[in-house]
Amino acid sequence: MGEVAALFRPWQNNTTSLIMSMQYTGGQHFSINGRRWSKPKKQQQCHLLLMRRRRRSCSFFESKAVMVTPPSTYSSTISTDNPLSESPSASFDSYLDNKPRVFRAIFPHQQRTKRLNEEEWRIDMLPIQFLFLNARPIIDMRLRCKSKGKDYPAGVPCHMSKVLELKIVRWDLQGIDEILKPSHFSLGVDGALYPDRHGKESRLRGQLQIRMSFIHPPVLDFVPEDIRRHVAESVLKRLMENLKDGMNGSLLADYNEFKREKSRLRKAL
Image (cartoon, rainbow, N blue to C red; front, side):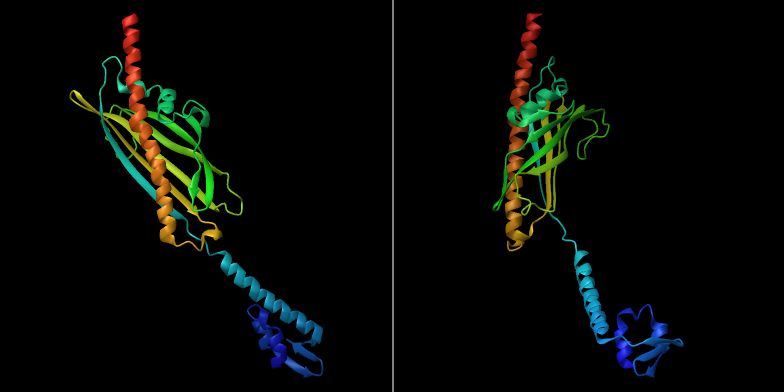
């Protein structure tokens, strides 16, 4: 009786009542609930044992499959504050209305950019090196002007006359082998740029946040987390400095040129 019950133990959860009413009738036969069955041959016993082992193996791998590795997330934030010399005939608000010009000032490398529509541009960014991995992010950046305090980004006072919002809306990661490609990767940029006026004095203020999140490929398992974090933060710092230079340096330089153009046009009239 014990030998027969052992053969059916893999299905015991579904056939408990059957096993409890199983009776051995002698020879190669037994009965379940009064019905007579033949005892499995040795080959059939081996097959049942193999099925039992496979079932245990499948359960093990199924439990492993539900274990999801959380992504590593890194972020960096900066604020900018520069004196702004405005002209009555060429205010910074009117300069912001020319989004293609503003975009070219912040991202001057025209050979790596492409305009998609009125508000969005595609940027082929410089390669990012993370330890021995090299990747080239492709991002779609949106520039959108907002005014009258409507839907201003967090941290921007509602009384500011106009705000230029910068945001990554799509991204892609190219130039990396599939075996080395992370199963999850995201890159986010949220920024805002606006003139802050107090009497006759004006300041150009900005805020910028970059977030990078990814699940590192298995080949990086041997690298300690503190080293991965240090390298990732260095990459973000380099990206942040490039954007900061565009917002602080080339943008202000182009605005000064914008004022001179308006002045020459006014004199010509």
